Length: 69
Image 1 (cartoon, one colour):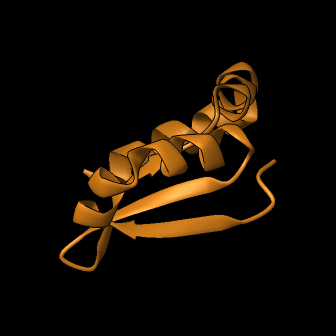
Image 2 (image 1 turned 30 degrees about the vertical axis):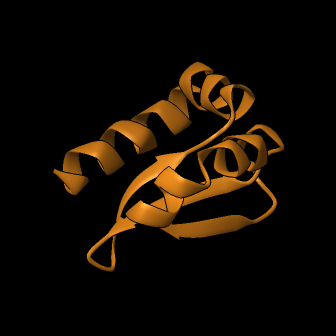
Image 3 (image 1 turned 60 degrees about the vertical axis):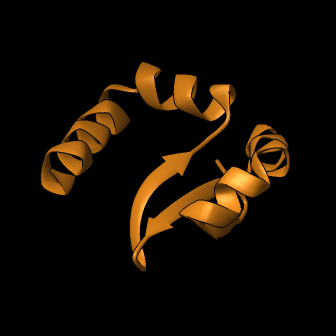
């Protein structure tokens, strides 16, 4: 599981995409905000695969996506 998170405004995320991707690859969740609202999350492939292969976590993920729409 990720140990910490970072939050980026969209423009900052665009400007520092390499760092954002590197941090995500190192296990740090990267939240991207638009107008102050968390809009997207960038996570490592390892974390994504862990979430997708866990039945319980997959249900939580799908519920989160549904509620976020």
